[in-house]
Image (tube, rainbow, N blue to C red; front, side, top):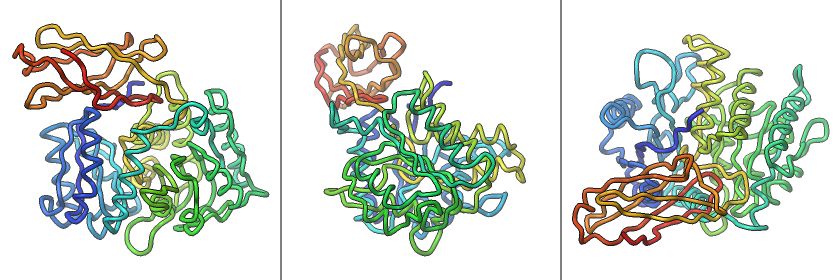
Length: 428
């Protein structure tokens, strides 16, 4: 399965959050994404206005990703056709008259500039400054939390996920299962450092039924920059439309930019979820992440899970597949790459030939496939981006290099479980 890893991003923010959103926009552009930033004053005031703006950008530039910055009081959401679920994914029904996603969307669900700054800081740091060496071993640790209900039981399903993770490269996958599961066990695991959490069980707007871990517990975490990505199969953990903060929002609002805590991203349902369809989705997410050709961004993984669920459970308006698609929302940055291993340092070589620059990326002497390579050259800072092939090579052409006076540029390289190269000078 090919990855959706480069493409155009549309970022829409409440006007009062524009300054705090800028570092995220700048980082995404530096990685090689085409980024358009819009304030709500340019978009309108209603969910229909937001949809029309997104659809127009989709038709003009073929955007692959949308990131909303602001709670629903600032950026309204749409309601699903199946059960009127609060549904940012409904903004991605952009081609045809079906109920299948045509792009990937997420939201920084925030109410204040300080909350924006907190979430932007954690996302940029997570991608740009990973732990390395022994300090990075937590990337190979995960947690499973599950109830004892169902047939097969939720903890049996969690063990299937655990088996897949352990066969890949994970050293630890906690089994916090009923009976005996507790919030203390969750806090201890997260504070020690876990890159991934799979939850299967009952839920409420503010808690997990298994362990009773709740908003207060999430806000009290002390896990620093060891931030997990969470796939939560539970009812209403992601009920973000109106009122007090939901469970997913609490995970993303924990900590401060200086002392982060909580999660890097979380995927949760805004309404009551069915039992099996979200488990099928979660299983696909885990299996694809651990497959040979890995999806690596939060949004790409979520999309593969949703599409698998729709394949199994249907795409008709009344189907369980459409219900799943509409109710599950990503809290965080859908383009953020998930870390699941000790990051590798990369080497790069750039060779100019006329107006083209050929870049080769290696790690430990081996070619790195599917690395994002972004190069900027010339006084006008012309920027181009590409993804490396199986030989670790990417070629980019520049108008600025038709001028022989251009002798240098800068390069940024990012990729799955890599230590990024950021703004490194290259001779041309």
